[in-house]
Amino acid sequence: NAGVTQTPKFQVLKTGQSMTLQCAQDMNHEYMSWYRQDPGMGLRLIHYSVGAGITDQGEVPNGYNVSRSTTEDFPLRLLSAAPSQTSVYFCASSYGGQGVSYEQYFGPGTRLTVT
Amino acid sequence: GQQVMQIPQYQHVQEGEDFTTYCNSSTTLSNIQWYKQRPGGHPVFLIQLVKSGEVKKQKRLTFQFGEAKKNSSLHITATQTTDVGTYFCAGPNAGKSTFGDGTTLTVKP
Image 1 (cartoon, rainbow over the protein chains, first blue to last red):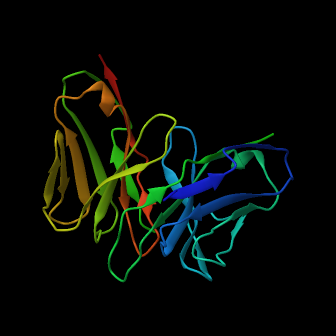
Image 2 (cartoon, rainbow over the protein chains, first blue to last red):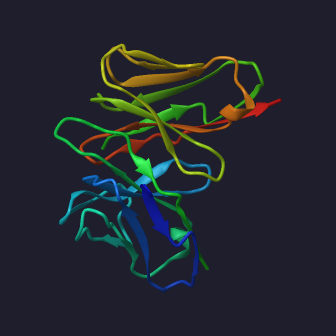
């Protein structure tokens, strides 16, 4: 199993550009999430999904869109990049179940710089 | 919304000294998870605690979940240089997890 994969590993954008960060998992996990991590800080939840066709906002959703058309893929779209979106982005997945939590598996991250 | 706080933010120790990080939640947690992130890496799951007052050990690491299920701690005995990194606690909730800001541990050989 490849686990959780993310592309690209690095990206530089100009202010106002749009792009999509890709995330895929091959573990048949129901739950998938996007986090951003700023220097010296923790992980802040952007959007998450509890299954194909179901997404919801996290703590810092503004400026980002997601969709979940398949179990495997959970892309994150930046609509109009701003310097405040310079960060490291992690995608994570886990099994899901009512009242039960499972460990999250994280991808290697995408380091995004917006100039 | 739920807030999860960790202290200290940074800890510098001499190799062989002990280390403890504390995690406090603003709400009662159904369970708590701990992750480790090496410098330049991604978070990796360490353990999950579920029961009130639970204590679990992994070699030199001891994890505790408070009786009220609102706080937790991670204690490392006799730190080694391989322990360097940032340790995060997280409160999972039906696919939506809240992470603490982490405690970054540096170990001087």
